[in-house]
Amino acid sequence: SQQGEEDPQALSIQEGENATMNCSYKTSINNLQWYRQNSGRGLVHLILIRSNEREKHSGRLRVTLDTSKKSSSLLITASRAADTASYFCATEGAGGTSYGKLTFGQGTILTVHP
Amino acid sequence: KAGVTQTPRYLIKTRGQQVTLSCSPISGHRSVSWYQQTPGQGLQFLFEYFSETQRNKGNFPGRFSGRQFSNSRSEMNVSTLELGDSALYLCASGSRGVADTQYFGPGTRLTVL
Image 1 (spheres, chains in turn red, yellow):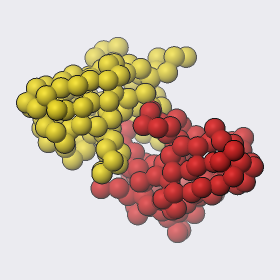
Image 2 (tube, chains in turn cyan, blue):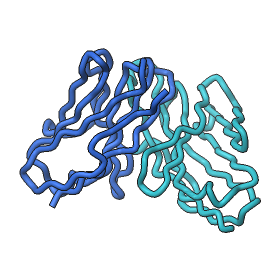
Image 3 (tube, chains in turn yellow, brown):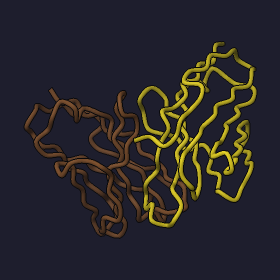
Image 4 (cartoon, one colour):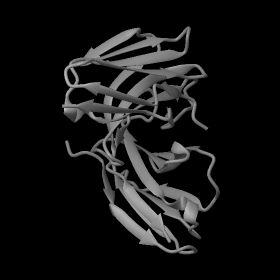
């Protein structure tokens, strides 16, 4: 079963606008990771945020994590047509026994129009 | 460093056959995880191997099995294929498999007819 719920399921914006995607999860985590997937290809790792971190930046990406609300958000600033893809959040459960297991949300389909 | 590689990229099989998929992790990574992605169920964890040992397993039937070799390369086998096994199979590698980033390969698209 999917732990994460992502919101919205689909997002359509114009180039240059910002895109915000949200992710909620149910159990305690070690970390939360965001991935991008283009048209059924492999997943590209975007950013990892640990449970003791609240915010991380990488280029045009900003990720926040609120463990009290069990939620995270991914902000892409100044979107480009090349950002069009599906975006997934994935959590690694806490406790040290999640060996290699990430639990994924259903994903947000982002479309950026030129 | 070279990324995660998976072979073959595409595969067509018929019901009842078996299939073996291969994954080569990033050099130096000892953890390899396998995932199944379908439109209905999304991305689901199959199992993880570290230093040739299965450390974790998802909720899949025994028809799904795997192994890891001493060079960290991993194979996944599905026996007695069913139509519902049609999916994108992704492997991911990590240095430790816990509390670190997982890097995914391009996937193997399996179609069962």
